[in-house]
Length: 325
Image 1 (cartoon, helix red, strand yellow):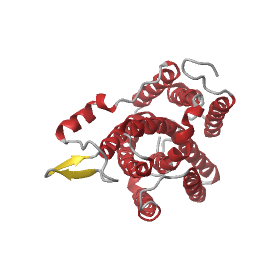
Image 2: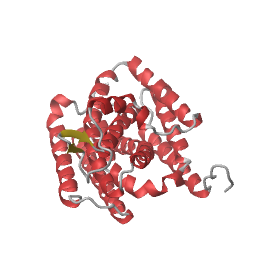
Image 3: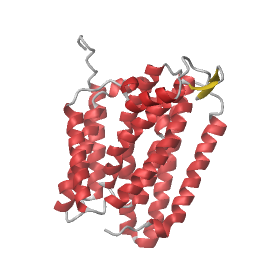
């Protein structure tokens, strides 16, 4: 299917968008988070509102542009596709937050340094997502690849429903183990530095090892999330921008939810059902509806699954291990 925003014609849109993102990141780190400090719930909530508002404003501008150039019906579809992709990516990012909590606890990273690790982790995530999306835009032109990704998402969703939770153990990760052989690791933190010179030799600090593991984790998550958004829209520009906005707000969402992440223990089942749904779209539902499952239905189903997962978690407290509620 032909896309409305091919890179060859709209490369200036990508360039302008990336310049805008770089400005936002520079303001974030260079102005508001120049000094390491503990991010409070109030601060993270404010930043969450800012990132969501910026994403929605961009969505409105994108909708207005598409409506003016391709017609109101197409503009509405484009706007809904961006919003749906943003919600899907934002929802799947909850899994990242679980990993962030475990990794920071494992390496003993103080709260005041966590923002710095997440900032550079997100910069790396943006690069890897761009690569994944570029590859996906080429591969998803082939129906066999679409079917393969759909089956993969279905199996991933089913696995999330029934497989027990796995503990995070960076020492067993082969890349982390290889890094430890190549680069000596300092036994303790040295402020917010990622590298420190000890006895005439450069050492990586625990902050660097935590950053490396978070980058590896995001690559794994991207394998699920990028195909999931391509199931929503065939427009690489929508996939890219919705991914970027969801990732930009991930740090604020982490600091807002980290302390209460266990409270939403049933949300993982909603996320599993979302993956199963988008997998079904790719292997069956799109063909059933003449090539495109209604985007408004997709958005409604995804919102409903998230509402059920959040509501059920709030209504029913998790059962402590070895005890009763």
